[in-house]
Image 1: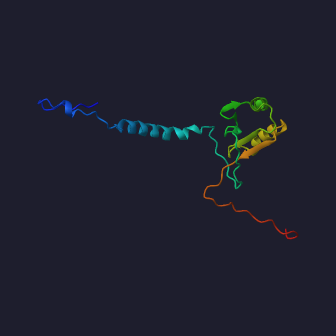
Image 2: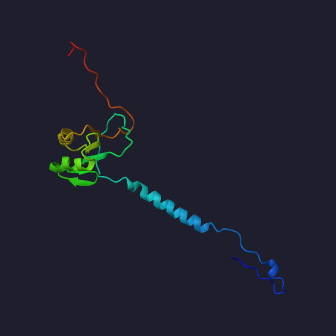
Image 3: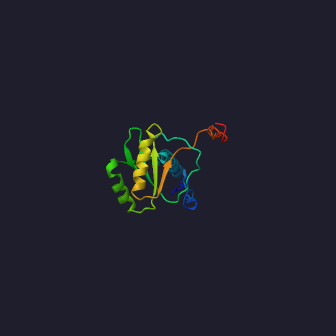
Length: 158
């Protein structure tokens, strides 16, 4: 509270007025610091196993709930979400995570440099365990152009 003192002639009491302005500078400082902190930490919230995904023209799948992600990285290691899992315990861990729900949504991600057979082996293992909703994950091509494809030859002209 600010107090105004007079010049000593006894009229100080009539000039006393409390300060009614709100100092917003500290509030702005705190809000700017919080803004910077959230801007820096927001990209870090989408962590996962780094994988270089192949590109595809398929439309993205819009699922309302969070799927379980199985990843095969460049070295051939298997991950469920962010934890390493041996191949022989993959099905048991998936059943424990999903509660043996055959309709649980599972995504299989594989590095584009890994042998495609390894990714299919993982997908086959998951499908044989009774899971029905298993999808392979790929990235959309950069630049928005469709890859060149050759048309099939007409019958009889091969």
